[in-house]
Length: 142
View (cartoon, rainbow, N blue to C red):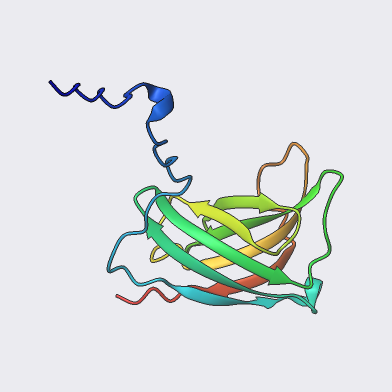
């Protein structure tokens, strides 16, 4: 009589690992991906930037790539904002260097279409310094 083959090992160590969950939510399908160019102000004449905005289930992921900005350290940093027509600012993230920056917004760029970058210092004032160095307008269409 032939011997029965052993059952495959089903211990956790023998199972293939499940892929790790993504650190970023999946983008909504069919949504346009707005892009914009950021122009320098008089405070940063040699700077420029581009941003791509992607709608996700968590909000808007904004990928910023800016050049011509010196690194800021020692309590100094850059901060990005979305602004609406009445001037209300929503902070979307801080960074030290402008290349390969990922920011997040919980407001729609349709309602807050202006993206600005300011120079900031770590202090007791959480508002904008007003030192705008880059500015651009998002065109999200209808």
